[in-house]
Image (tube, rainbow, N blue to C red):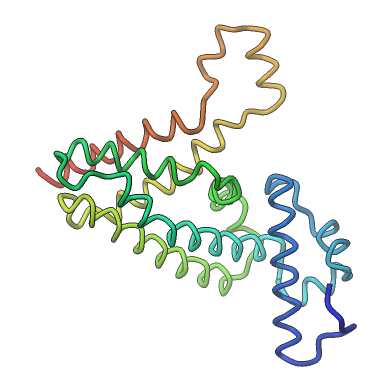
Length: 224
């Protein structure tokens, strides 16, 4: 909440934008992306939905901005985690596995980031203007570049393949997160027929295996 009824100055408008962002961020701690609604957000912020839309053109525009924020926070913490998780003297195959494990571990407490990444292309990039889409993609490119730089620092054998590996890693995070959270109907089906449980996926285990495979493949292609 703010202590003014109507944002008249640029400073007040920015304050209100931050209130909307912070309120949405707190909602993401309570519920998945799919349950975030403008109606509930408006109620919590204390503004009419039409007024919320004066600061952000859509629900998706708000969530894209929060995705960028969460991604930057993750990237800022990643260097220390990779430094402690990767043995610089180990063979490249071992460092590749350590990279996969360290990235997976770095996401253990980042449910919101994983949830937003899983919704990025199929949901969040829709219902936004070309201007918002372009602004987000520029931010995403900068984030990918940061992670690629870190990957290449620990796996210099990647060479110019580091950005492609990073894009694949980001896609894998979102995909595995989605598959590791089956619907209630699917969970019931697994319980009723244990033979179907082969499809039940643990996020950390599946992600680490996939990232290790992607990293090994990228290293192999870079060396050929």
